[in-house]
Length: 255
Image (cartoon, rainbow, N blue to C red; front, side, top):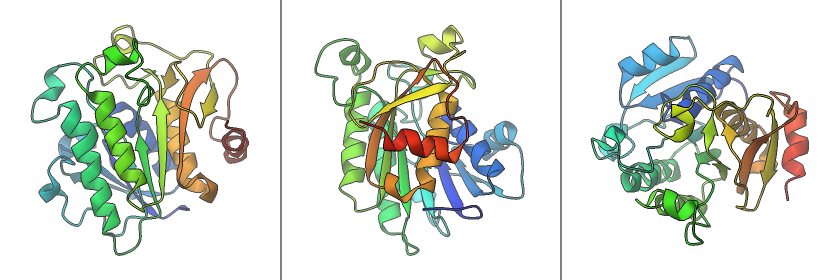
């Protein structure tokens, strides 16, 4: 497990979940390496802090990440691209490269870590086991995003690096960084502060970006969450917020 003062690398730190997770980790006393393609954009979105390093690199291009995991105790990979062709695909950022090649590169670096990587948290997606069962996931996978994420999951699970895989549904709440329907409609979770989680890949509901980020952070804190995978959606209720013990209850109740 990790604890305050440890260094966490957040890949995709300028994305919606990545921004929230980075800020949560900083608030809890962790040192964060915020990895993105643009150090300037990272600084604009995340600001500056004594325990924050803005790191420029591209997970798709391994040569840009030399030494990036030096001193790092855990990795949270929140990188993502759009499921359908958009401007975000420019620069080799299509689903196959962003959602498989990139995470695979990071996992390979984690496997070589001299310090011994304590955890690799990978934000995947609902539907990675159901894209061959018809809509909606067959449509979402039209350009291969779910196949790419599934391959990344499998590579991580076979790597020997302690892992946690998080599978949210369609993401809601700011910051809106993608081009999906919820972004266009500014989808919000509202009273859905509670989280429903399952070790099965079977949930279909929407998921708050804040809930995804908090579940990633909480996964890092507990040794029993090593080598686990779970789906998560936001449902009506007060929810665990940032209470460690409330998250432990929900993790241990997963079925």
